[in-house]
Length: 288
Ligand code: FAD
Image 1 (cartoon, rainbow, N blue to C red):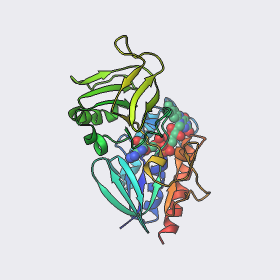
Image 2: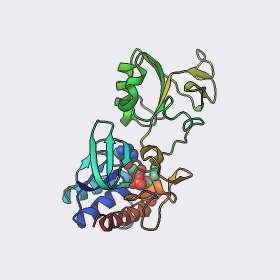
Image 3: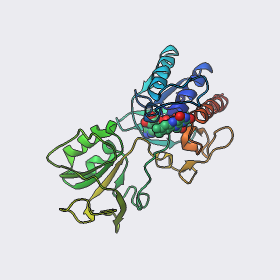
Image 4: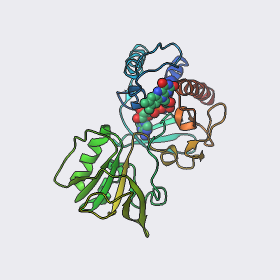
């Protein structure tokens, strides 16, 4: 069994991976080949130790070289759930993968788009974060899909093959996906309403003249770059959306550690790198 699974390929996850490698621990790091949008999008980085006034894209290239040199490979799968069993963790991915490890490091960052009112209330009752996990529940139904990144458009494509109608609310420019059953709405959603399950999505202002200020839907998919850690791991203690950690980056769950933006402010590369390093040392002690 693996010593550790790292969730997230930003600075926190990479820093943890480098330290686990140095400590000769077995691990997998889940994320994507572009590492992190929050690194790539930085215009100029001036406060990261050892990196002199470059762009985020340059930092991504440097990190890729470092990973290659250390023979660390990113597992390009999106984690959909982490389950604490008696003395191990089971990690499931949207691609259908199932992995076991003695410990986990949550380094999944934070989503900059705020949650919508009602999102938590209707989670599992019409609100979903994973197209491939829950898409089949909406065969021939009408759904809304809020998507924050073009990188997840393939999930919209997957849903479009199942659902009768999709209202797509993209939170990014240059939408590429289209289809007969996809209608794009460029308005800010405000609230989710329903009785037992999701019934309506309300907007800040009427979406378009042809719709009222609300849509009747059977379900709502939130496709975001970063899923809230509390959604990923049942029973995880969070405060104001951040994972509660000790100085050793341990959480309230034995063998579960967290690092980077997901543990709280300041949202900075140096903090993320430091916490990733501490979390990896704590894992090394834990699995001894
Ligand atoms: P992230 O970088 O957000 O990485 C998390 C990764 O985890 C992402 O790749 C995400 O796709 C992946 N992930 C999430 N959920 C899952 C899942 N379920 N399965 C698989 N993978 C998952 N900080 C500075 O110190 N200096 C700066 O100059 C600076 N400039 C910035 C400029 C911009 C435009 C932005 C947006 C941020 C900037 N920051 C800066 C802040 C910095 O980007 C963050 O503090 C840092 O990226 C946090 O690193 P992280 O590893 O915690 O999270």
